[in-house]
Length: 578
Image 1 (cartoon, rainbow, N blue to C red):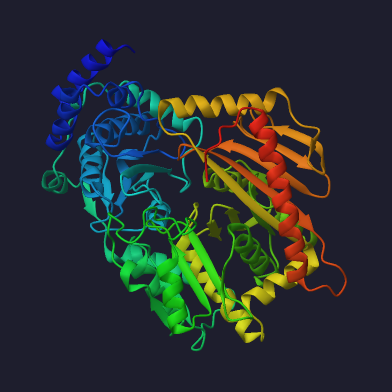
Image 2 (cartoon, one colour):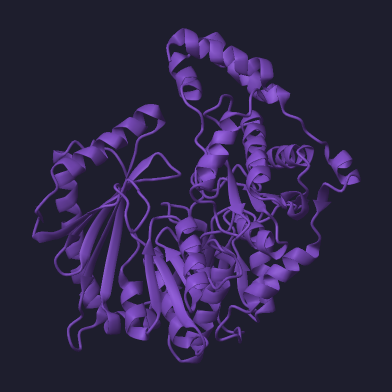
């Protein structure tokens, strides 16, 4: 699109935009003649996909704003009415987090749905994402919507959709909704039904506290040990998000009496004043948690991202320090715990992980007699695959995880649930305490029996439309001339997921190497990043301390990472990233 076309599209946007703030913002862009900024806002639309949509707040179709939310909701409403015959009886759940404009986006969402004759079940206050996932199932709704940007920086917001089965949407629903959005027309032609008028017509139903109570009761039943602890010292941070009150209530009900909050991050605040990037995995995000844990001599630190669908855990070491567990380590601990210590009998227990997570859960499942699947990255694939296998086979889903600190225990939700997972992880820690061991001791027992798997990740950021093209070139170059060796490792298999087959098509490449290792390359679905995931397996020697084997494994892993990145640079990978 040339400069004239961009300006014409911007002027048309101004005439229809319902938000005076974004109108003023866009007028400023036009007055400055900021062509690159204008192109980034108007050369493309914010894509609606299987995770809904997420983007930077601002004016234009490639930003998150009230106009985009209204058009998206109209498209969703029309698709629901075309594909779900009883949607006007079942309705749609609507919730929001504490980010900037979340309240306005949620109200616009509900108002558009109500105007289309679809009842909305609205959470009147701030809620974590898992509660919306739960409520969609609990109420038998046709869909659920949560306004959130999860762990993204403060300038972002987003719009996440659940189908009536409680899971995130997958094809063909994403394409069908996107097509309806494209046909929605100018935003000033979209009808809205104001909250009071919608309530009067029975189309706006404020959800009672009993829905939250039902959720807390349901996750309480996920515990295996079930006895809490009066001596285990826990630190918890909500990371300026909306999980705090729910997590603290769940822990108190479960009998954990020594819970210390990170006070500076306890209240919802969409500006995230103590962290630039409110993701527990990011450098510096856990600094206040570490300080609190040192002050109270904590045994365990639990951290959520702002919408509380992800969980990070830090544990006390034998030397008295604190160690952050990787997403794979938490996944292996929870997976082994529910398989080895959970209820026995009945249908075969079933666990699921992803193609970028550790392969160790699959090895554990095989040895413990559980069913296992490995799916594409994203909890939408975990949940929907589990629903298919439960319907077609005598299996019982007990756990799923992805290495990006997302976990789901049981079927209370059909998406990752940081609150439910945190409660079960605290239960695991209390069980370890009752057995006279620690979380790290339990992890070492698993590693000695099933192998020591070490993993790492390298991310490279390429923002804007140009960045999308750069990432496409990188993936194409990796396909053109795949390596036979990576340093000291022989490549034994190359898996290209783009053609599809057993799994849906996805722009992912995996290079498997001798000895049980692999590196997987993929562009992120929610951030302007290309990501490389690395894993190697080490076998501790007889009588060898696991820590000694870990030091050796970490050194090998670093050589593996260096070898692959050298190969990637040869294939045109720019020298940027984290």
